[in-house]
Length: 379
Image 1 (spheres, rainbow, N blue to C red):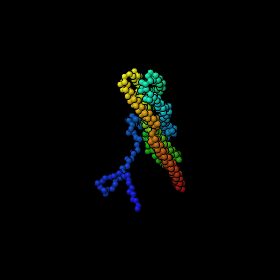
Image 2: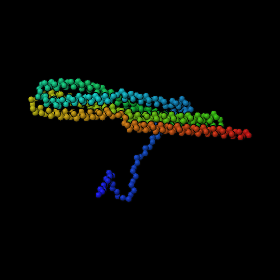
Image 3: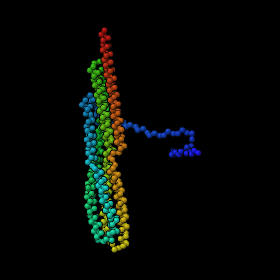
Image 4: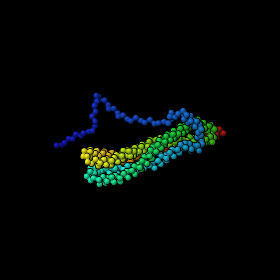
């Protein structure tokens, strides 16, 4: 006898009032509209500055093409180096290790105190109190030393946070400057290709002189070089655009660590020190049994809460110290955009070379046709 098995699917139940209706197509994610750089983001004075600057651009000047926008690119390079130096000089992992060491000091002391401390204090009398005091003094030295270093790190983190704010504002200014360079250059390039270059081509056709043809060819080459320069500036602009969220990520990481240090100094350490005060108070009221029980219960509750807080602080600190300053998705997106940009550059270069070869062939044919025509006229 053969067993017939029924296969179960995980498909969710579906209800419909029209069983013969065609299933609706799944909604696709909306396409992202590419952002076009234009003058809409500029103020009126900035637009005037772009127009005035565009009039001064001389595309036929090789030196100008080479140096166009170089100052803005250098600012971004210096800016990136400054940001990198700021990140390199900080070791948040060291801060995390110090907080972990501090928690270890406090938990180590509390563990002994829970096993032998407040309750054992009444059994061993003055000797136990002296031992507890000596152990507390030893731990306090290490705690105070770590606290001092942590306070120094916190001050440095606060300075870095303020410095990152300034860097963010500078990056915004540099981003706007690069955008204005691109807009002015595109405006000039469009003007030259629409008026100057066609005039030179027409003149070369009418005169038939090689030097006129060369001038038209040179101007076309200058336009191509200037277009490539503008594309380089667009890549620089994208780097500046991506740097803004990167700065905020670093700043947010510094802020979280500074808050962790502040919580440790202002909450954890005072709570730990209060245990010694409590132990002394219990010893002074050792003869009152009711007071002894109440203080013992309070001490145990305090130790449990302290252990829970220390556990949470340790876990959160470990998480923060292990977190990268830049998400992997951001790096993947940046890498993808760079690859696409490089592919586009290669494509443009190939098209440019193909057009230039076609133009050279056409120019040769035109010159040969003109010479043949001149020979025909003389015969």
